[in-house]
Amino acid sequence: MINYIIQTILFQALFIFIYDLFLSKETFFNGNRFYLLFTAVISFLLPLIKINSIQKIVPSTYTILLPEVILSPQKVIEKTNWYQDINYLNVIFWLGVVLFLLIFILKINKIIQLIIRNPVVKKNNYKLILLNNNTKAFSFFNYIFIGNTIPSEKKQNIIAHELVHSKQKHTIDLLFFEALKIIMWFNPMTYVYQHRISLIHEFISDNIVSKSAEKKKYINTLLSEIFQVEHIAFINQFYKNSLLKKRIIMITKTQSKKVKQLKYLVLIPILSSMLLYTSCSNESKEIDTAVLLQNQTIYFDKGKTSSEKLDKLSFMDVYIGKDAPKLKELTINDLTADEKNEFNNINNSMVENESTFMLRVFEGFEGRKIIYLNLKENNSNNKDKTNPLLFSQIDQVPTFINKGETKTDFHKNMSQFVADNFNTELANSLDLEPGKKRIYLQFTINKEGKVTNIKARAPHPSLKEEAIRLAEKLPTFKPGFHEGKNVAVGYTLPISFEVK
Image (tube, rainbow, N blue to C red; front, side):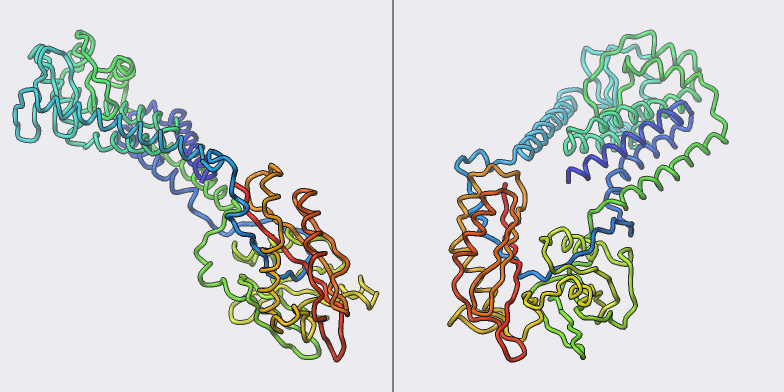
């Protein structure tokens, strides 16, 4: 969300810069009004638009892991002080929203009170509100407010000016930016947009009225009287001292040549660049998740191809063999965003060990892509035949004694053992950075069913020691069985928890 907000603000700043540089001095007032409204809206949509983009290819190593064990969030996230659980950014954001909403409601109420407490003159297309004892002049939708102390000879031009605001629905523009100010009160560009659009509104009204009235007399109306100002951002005011000089310059300015409308074409390369930028972000859409996220299938090539469906959900399957599958080979850029993320996560989450593979990607079966692991390469790096076999290679995996014989039973019992024996309170005392943390515990269950060759990697030395202690506490297993004999089997067990 923070990245989305930053991109939106940057896009709006760029659009305003282009407007001030190329368009603000031209007399294409309606075109400029459309530009400001369009760019304000499109800046919110652009960060959501994603197209296929090139992402980095990461180092290629792969190890088959046990299903990840997720520690109880209540145990790990629990803090000793309640205030540590508060998201202060969210609190500040909502306080700002409530404050600006209250300010908006008060200003609306002020307008309503002016309508109720002052005389109303109904006209054909508008209602004239006569304000007692002041020289204010402004409009809100089809209500035109005008001070009764303003000389009658000047009222005609003022009402004509405010009628343009009313007919062209300028109040809707200002209310749109007022709504943005409530939601994104922290965004300075919203205030800049509202200032620019209110100035354009005055240019439009001045341009229309000055055509039907003598320009000198109209300018004199602006200059000869010190009008009072109503400090409400979403009303159209006839007189505003900070805008007066610019309005007079525009009234007397020669009409811009039509060829200068080509300046609007600068939007094309700007929008293209923004689309390219947003499409290259690493955030992936969730649109394919429901379709492609399925139980992972492992394919084995041991003279003939066999397969096994795992409990693990994934976007891609895995093919293990000495020879590559006879399928079309793909590049990383042929993967969807979700598949690329899974590919990257696999690589980034692997602990270093002797079983390394060069990853290749192929078209798979039933519309799913597969990652190919070259067993010949692994064997060349592991000439010691006593090395443990992979979990997915053996006929019968090790199991907890008298607690089931299947892989599912093993996963369930291992998860329960970790939950019962891992010291979850330890994580609270280490002052870890917020976010998801993982511990990788690697060990071998040898031919006698004993746990050996324990290794661990963790975000803190104390957690590494705790993981090793956990592995040393594992019971003696019923050993793995393959091709008629007991075998040693290697495992990598990910343990994850969340720190807030």
